[in-house]
Length: 265
Image 1 (cartoon, rainbow, N blue to C red):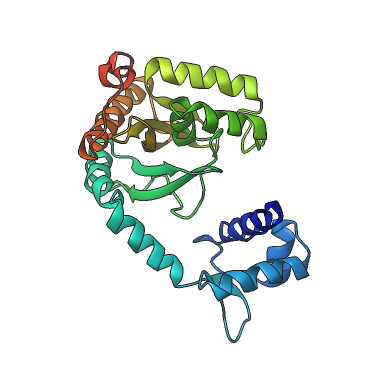
Image 2 (image 1 turned 90 degrees about the vertical axis):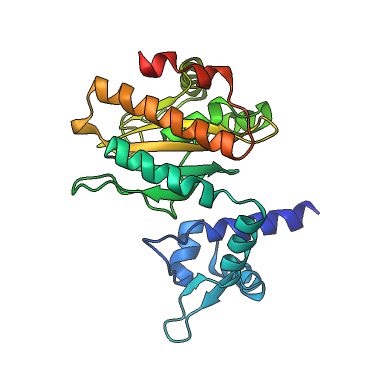
């Protein structure tokens, strides 16, 4: 059983290498990136192709995501609509802050972006919708972990995979714990130049009907133009937006986030 699950895990992880920036992969490059030999990678890809999750270009022989990915996405949104809920909230948030607003859901290895709204200005932060946001290096990830259950948090801390993205990235479990405690106390996360050198992220989680953290609403700002006053203003706007999403999906806003004392101070 464990061998089967290990194979499934390896196959699913391959799907994460397909992004907007790199939508197609050759066998050799994908094997090298995933850390497998070519025979293992091809066996995993063949399994994904049989399920319709990956397909191979007839001419270039490169691999790309298959059509069944779209089917699953449609089923997920029809059964548990969330993208349609956050879309208008993000649009209003981007207009209010004049910065890029985005929403993400927590998964086993990071945050998955489900919505993006960009402001009407030439210089703005670009958020890749296909890029998984690391828990330890982004405001979205920190905000999510700060209110996650013990099992989720312990898994991230035990993994210890705190990849360095910039000189400001959190690198140890102890530093991450301190940052999560600060985030819980103030009700929002702020990450300055921790994932990209010129980006500051501010994020607040939203919650489902069971009281569990479900995802995050965030604003990504160009670091050089963000003042302390601007941070406070954006934090208050993001908090309001996240609370709106929580209420819309039938959740309950925790006191730490409802009060908003620090964000509005």
